[in-house]
Image 1 (cartoon, helix red, strand yellow):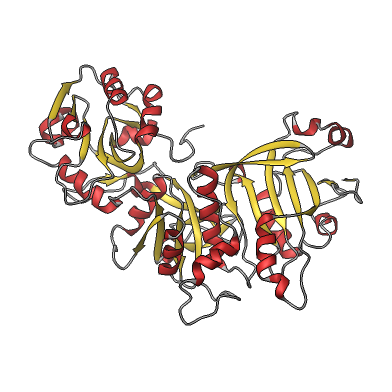
Image 2: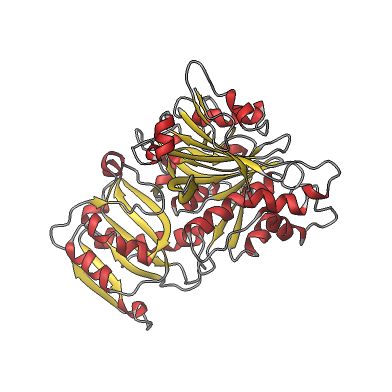
Length: 493
């Protein structure tokens, strides 16, 4: 059923009489069949009501239009159509009274439709609840949208498709990463598409800027650096054994990444795991939670939001990417400026402590000494750790009390220690190592706290900006406790 088809805000209720195809006409033919098919992938069967917002001025498209499309002989329209998606149908009365925005009709997000070809899908922000795989853990941010005088909130990840001329996959992927950072963190400024092109144009060696020929990995990294990010580039060739583990570790730390395959780049924003079987590890090595990882969640500008990228090439599920783990050649992680210690060096340093004669598990933790262990490595902030102390319990009230009182670095690497079966079944941990991410790899004692079930060791020297001085606190009656969940959406609802 179509309500007010000639108004500025027509409504499409998807039913037996009027289906998705009606959106093409209601969007003044800005939306084409290809764009409609892309929107239907995540929305079909989950969305019954669509409000069409005509004559919409989109800041991102207007930026590209003014700097590129307006210079063409045949110019597309400068205004857009914005589509708003709702879980349930919308009646004329509820639309007129505004009650459709307040009566539990879940808002699923929006998509800006441009009059560009071959890709009409512009700035898009859809709810993460549309993700096909419910066990995915994603980097998410929030947006507030205003429509008909009402403010609606939605949580998800920004998406945009390339227009082939002003933006290609490289610029689109950069836009997604930078818009996520500006949405989630106040100290990152919002970046418009032409600003991204200007960042890249500084390094357009031997090629033109418009139409864009695409960017190399080092150009992507340099564009991020010019937006106050400290990017790191990892290649499969340089880290053949740890490449996928490092990619997972940065995602687990809450950083979406730029992943490159042959001739293309997309954004990876999350992962999902299979805990049914614990993979074997070589003697003397630790198992990390990355070993359970079975898929990535990606936003590919050639596709649609929240596609699944499988590790197993034999898996072919609805709405999955054509790429697989081993197709990824490089990835770029947008680290904050004050993270001086990268993941591979933090891991090496922490493993050395865990195996050390005086600080290792064999010496200080009889209860863990003969257990099958799994480690979880991630980067977070001292503030985020303290915010979760009460809810997690930390295995002993003394640990939570001491962590709450001591100064912590702004950025810290945490390596949680778990008995494998407890992690598989209940996501429980037994202890953790906290490492100062603002130290460098050549400083031998960068850890702040070493927590085993039986003992907590604090470096109160480093904590108070002095030489290392260890303080040992016995912990009676320890119990397993919940893992840290703040970087990504929770493992359990």
